Length: 231
Image 1: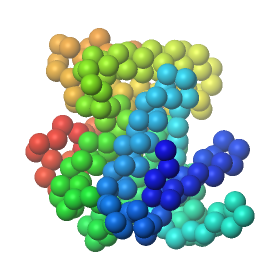
Image 2 (image 1 turned 90 degrees about the vertical axis):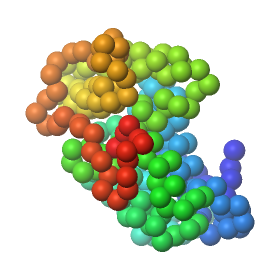
Image 3 (image 1 turned 30 degrees about the horizontal axis):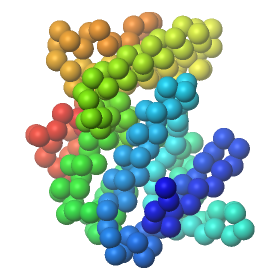
Image 4 (image 1 turned 135 degrees about the vertical axis):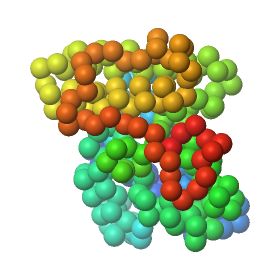
């Protein structure tokens, strides 16, 4: 369902989703377009795992123009460069400038910054390279009506990763993507589940390659996360 005058444009295997900040709907009924976009992307990533599809991309803010189905402008260039240079693995990178803009751009949020960032941070994780990305595995924990749904998803995610780590054992370039997923998956469950329980959800397989650093929880420096389990 389209809201806020949003648009989708597809190029080959690339999909561009744009949401105008100054739309009449957003000016009249602010519902937190950054949060809504992040939550929606997290849900899409989780859903597509069941289809064996991984997403990689970038979320940013900037000026752009659409003419006869063609997009151009600094916003689309920034998103493309962010995806190409920082995404690397199957993750959706969130530009740090977008998070900073929440402090000074009321149209991006539904609540004051300190409250809004708490909602958003449920769906964000920071990798060891300093890149913030959408945490769809952790973010989905509180999205279902039944807590057992998330545990079922963890098993599906685990099996998907283990299958592809083995399948691409002879292709180190592709396998590295699943090794990154392994370290991400294991980091999330060790943070969100208790010892003695999370072990059955751990992804097994070869040790993480040297070019896929371990992912550790990192507290965001600009707000108190004492009430949140994730960084």
